[in-house]
Image (cartoon, rainbow, N blue to C red):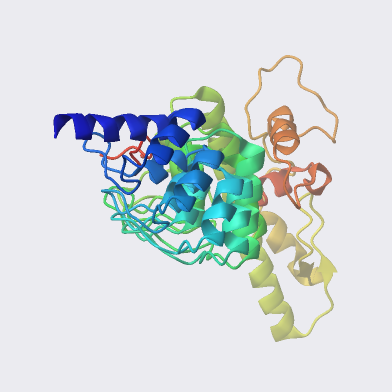
Length: 394
């Protein structure tokens, strides 16, 4: 018995390490069970081979390995191939009858695996074979959610994967239900984990930037709490309201000790308040205009609100907004010396924005789309490891 088990384990290891000649010898001798489950690794030879040993996968399938056999976590060989990003093996398994939307004990499909581990080509191949992008795991997270919380740092590729899922109809506002991250939207995950390109893809898809979770925190709160500066700036540029408070009354600016970030957020708060005053003035003036039917002229101020004001109300409006500076303070407070008077100066760390734009090679990110004025800056301003130890997968 001991010798038999040892022989099977050696066969399993040969498959896992890609020892083609050794595997071929075992198969020719006919002394091994190709569907035997390793006592050590809780999976079959084809599971471990699917992590990148294409020739051995072919040999095992020809020798009778079951393509839809599950490991102890409920994963198919396809899950293993997807997690490691081996598109060719995905195709071979699909050609041999693999099911594509099987979910493991945690509800993960092969597409979830490809998404989380940032494998764009694998995700594309799975979708081409009919993968369901709407499947949710036990925490009610879709493949898009998993992209947003990926531990990988290839921002460009993550952004492309996010755009792929969005283009295929993924819900950009769906909320998860897992304990500790309940009611997280994709944007909140992207903010928490610091993925600016993914965040930009979601913003471009008109996601709800003001959505909040169980504690009342928005994506801006989470990005600030984690000191994810690039995401914070993107959210502010997109118009995320920095004056929104969590359930305990905390502002986003109160969730960081970083002086630069805190300064930017506090100045953004001021701008939002100023613009709010102007908006209220607009509403009052338009209401008055409609009531009196009098002629109107635009409010003349640097915010360019475009509000129409009747001549008789001009003085009232000037008084109501007298506390509002004709030019808002910069988002990042600067030292008194070396302050430029150039009207084209940015009010946010422009070099950071340019870095974001250069790194994020995804659709619709254009540096020229960002206006250089204070109004624009204010309004348009993760217990299981998903890893294999020669056969383990989340």
